[in-house]
Image (tube, rainbow, N blue to C red; front, side, top):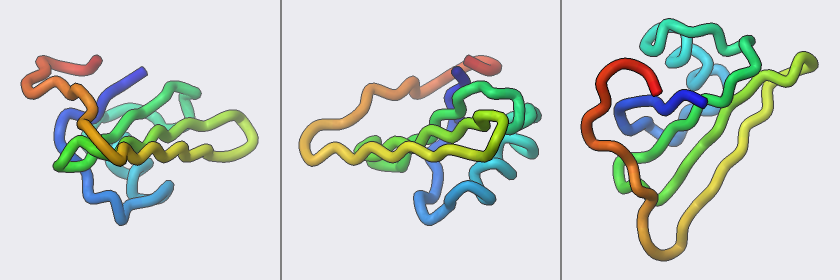
Length: 77
């Protein structure tokens, strides 16, 4: 499981998020790992993964409260 360090524009979908995985995280989106993205307000999460037949994208929206998200992260988690 990898967390993207910075908040993400949630208009991005599979193509945009997989580019972030390759370009910013320097990982392969085809690895089968879970890649987790959060919005600026920390009220929404997207999880991208490859399951050998195609990409899956999960989306979670909190109506109340916020996700706990690391503010500073060294390296990849």
